[in-house]
Length: 256
Ligand SMILES: Nc1ncnc2c1ncn2[C@@H]1O[C@H](COP(=O)(O)OP(=O)(O)OP(=O)(O)O)[C@@H](O)[C@H]1O
Image (tube, rainbow, N blue to C red; front, side, top):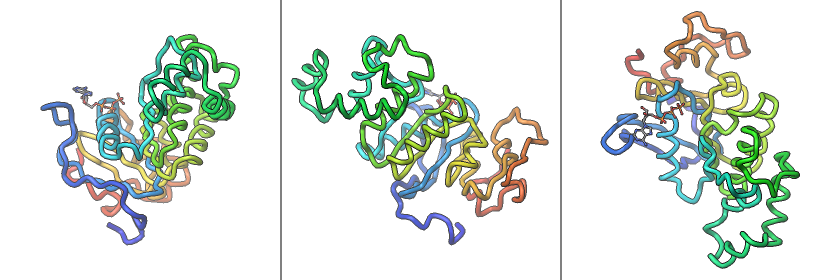
């Protein structure tokens, strides 16, 4: 590992761990380190294991991490307010939660209103989530994760359903409130421009584990089997060699 990398305290480390579902191993012998204060973009083709890895991080980080799942995990019949409130359901008594369903509690209503204003949902707090657009649902799921008020944010494609401008704004809001973030996404440019580090999964392994500043779009293209060999690597990172250095890819044994 290069001496300039990972100078922060380790929040979580995996050392040769098999990750998967039941007896099906998706990511065998996975090793990685998440440092406190790091912003990680998690990339890889569909089925590479991004959700599997996020679930493993979530299980290990427990109450330290807020969670924004891929399919939002919202209750369609309940209002935006109630879905966001659910971020802290476990912190309050059953009686308070029940009462809040019928008549929103003043404190939480104020807190959720503030979040909804930030996320452009202020006029929708009483609307059932089932009546929202995809982007509005996504923002509701982010509001619920922000409402949890945790140190770490784990997001499974939390900005997949919004336009690029809004994606930047949402990531900014997430980062204002979480020192450490791990975000699965498919926007490679965003991964390079907005995150400290990239984890790239391919063929059951961590093919990329490198600072974003050491990577080019071509490096990221190599994660995707269908990408053309002559990639569109045209951004500022192209001063770097197309193939990352061994330090940049500590896990790149026998790349396919
Ligand atoms: N609950 C499950 N039980 C068994 N296998 C699963 C389960 N969830 C995912 N898998 C399998 O694990 C592998 C990795 O899936 P995963 O959802 O982690 O990929 P992903 O990179 O998040 O994909 P996508 O970008 O499509 O969301 C796939 O082969 C998938 O079929």
